[in-house]
Length: 468
Image (cartoon, rainbow, N blue to C red; front, side):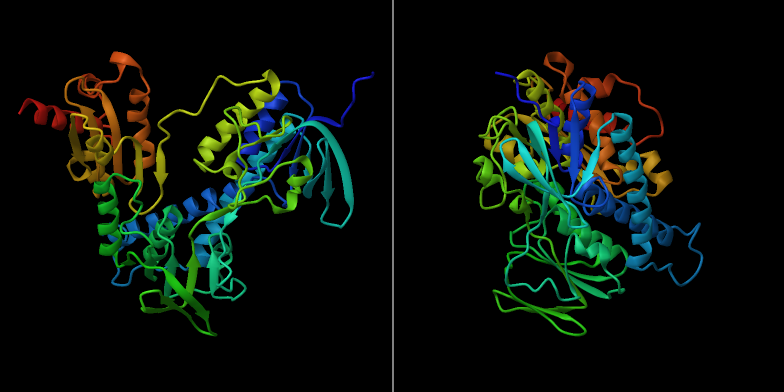
């Protein structure tokens, strides 16, 4: 019997980091690959509504805060004020550059990008509905679902109201709010609380839990709470919303405990759902969970042999950096039957609040629970020459290490450039055996003045504690 032929060897659905990683790996392995993207531009949620715009906004606000705080530049009684729409312009320019860059990858590697909404017809066929209403059908031997996620929208909040936003639609905010309610104090909620407060907007941050970002080391979480409150953010812990009412000129939120909070607008940032509904995955025998996510094995293969899934659509860790690797690993498994490479055990967190947070490895609470004999070494940024020069003195670097072997067990950083600083320590932690010890930081000569010098300061501080 003749071998069945298909239009493509593989089709990737979704051009975010996960989809891009899979498409590029397959293309470089001489596979005939097509990318399906439902939106008019490539890049997915990461480029258009998530990582790129929010970090661009944060960068603009951080520079604004520095300008107004620095007497060298701000010599007037009235501080410089920017509207949210002003900093959105910068974010949009970054998005345009990212689209152009990422588009060049597909062109250079000969991967056609087909714009339209994909849905499965059968195990080898997709239906593509174009923006003009026309419909195409294409076939492939294998598929990668990388459709990402979107903000969760509870049914009892009217998101069609012009003063009610989620983390996607807030990027279309037109007016200049004087106050905002943010529901959800996870990573996205805390980042936007920093952004709006940095613009001088009054912020009420509603947190369903008893502390911010409870997955972090408690000392770092407490530092974030302090600095948000110190900047003027009102944090309401242990609160659930009961109702949200939008009027012509404000939003009124009532909590389960009976509190009433009013503001110019509201941002709901509590949870995300997988983009699965329009794919008709049931036609190939797949059933997503209640959060719209698909289950996969160690090779990112779903329960259907020729269908793989990567990125937010499979849940944890839901990070752009990890998603790209997942795409590459899935492509390897598609080519070779399995992939020996796996995501590293200690994936660094990067949280772009003001100040920034990043961590990798164990927290103090985890080590205490496991009865690991550890010690702590700290470097306060205010003691570093580079931080004094840049006037970024808020924050610290915290090293957790085994008292006896001096193995680095966890690194936690709070302050400007934390997400960059963390990678120096991560590289040492990834060394096996005797390569991962506190002594590396003591014996290594660092450039001076740099923020990296914090590792030497923290290591010496930790050794002093051990030596008494």
